[in-house]
Image 1 (cartoon, chains in turn yellow, brown):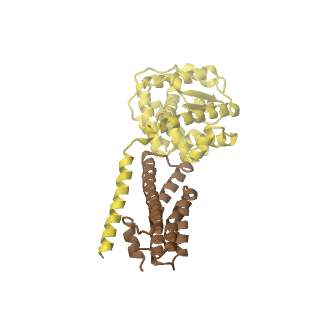
Image 2: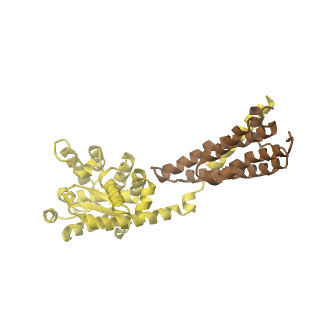
Image 3: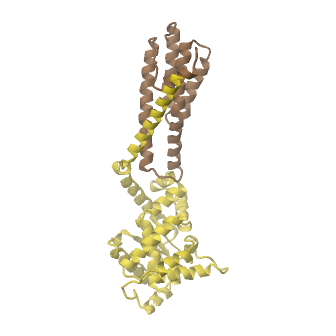
Amino acid sequence: MQTLMRTLVQGLVLMVLFLVTWKGLSRVEWRTLLRLEEISRETESRLGENLDRFLQKMEPEFQAPEAREVLDSLVFHLASGSGLEAGDYHLHLVKSPQINAFALPGSQIVVYSALMTEAESPEMLAGVLAHEMAHIRLGHVKKKLVKEVGLAMVLSASGNATPQVLQVILKHLSSTAFDRNLESEADEMALEMLQKAGIDPRPTGLFFQKIARSQTGSELIPDWLSTHPESADRARLFLQARGGDRKSLMSPEKWEAVRKALP
Amino acid sequence: MLPANESEAEKASNGYLMSLVALMVGLPLPIVNLLATLVFYLGNRRSAFFVRWHCTQALLSQMLLFPLNSLGFWWTISIVFGSRLADDSFIAYLITLFLFNLLEFVTTLRSAIVTRKGKHVEWWFIGGLTHLVCKP
């Protein structure tokens, strides 16, 4: 009996020792110490470069200087309002009938031309851009990729990636949603970015509402909507926010001209 | 408790060596170490008490480490091929696992040497467990 009690106590002590050692070591910021974040950023950057090259081949950029200027201008306003460098973001304008925009590794944002055509004002487009910029700032793109395709594939794609692997990654990023928490985080940051840039966030809410209403019919669901669910709820966040101080980003006539120049 | 002869001392020592040799193969696969000591234990079930006792101690040490090592292994797999991220808690677990495995390795090596010389050695906690499990 004595042996049993002694053995049990010793076992308990060993278990506690293991747990205390583990929990104690968990307090150390190993990822920072081992520079894993830096390695992670390098991996993401290389993956971004590979995807950029792949995208240029598969969906060449659409040459529309006025539309491009508008996009660059919006990103500039959003970035500078939040103390960021606009040059850190790389935009791709792609000719497509899909109403979609998505973020890629390496701080890249792809905007399909139909999204610009659908937006009735530049403020609406600014909201979508702010949302994608927020995903990039919050590190959601990498998290989503690792979660959906696995770390092994991400690492493989950042090296000598095959077109098939890059295709899979592109498909995941362009056609599947982030989880609800990440979308909420991105919305909140996007709202903050819009307000800091002096851009009225309410048109973004109207844009979400407009697209949400189109869901009720048998029309094709815009891809940006299908990958960003619960737009009606999210519209409320922007509609109830205070407006920006800046005057309209562009005259309605000029915006119409930009839209008409798009396919 | 002492071995009756040289042969018993050698067999008892080999029980510990089984887990050390399998370590090279078993490093990424926790089950290999456990299987190696289990096979040796089963092969010596009818041996002298000294041999049985030390084979049991070697086996029990692997049985205790097995779930901890398995957790580390599958956690790593879920990070590499699945959706988890390698956070500070994961790295801390691997370090803790390494430290305990290192302790076990050193203790096993020492036990292999000591029993080969015909001396008895009892591990903390596992020695007590072995006494409860293995009877003359």
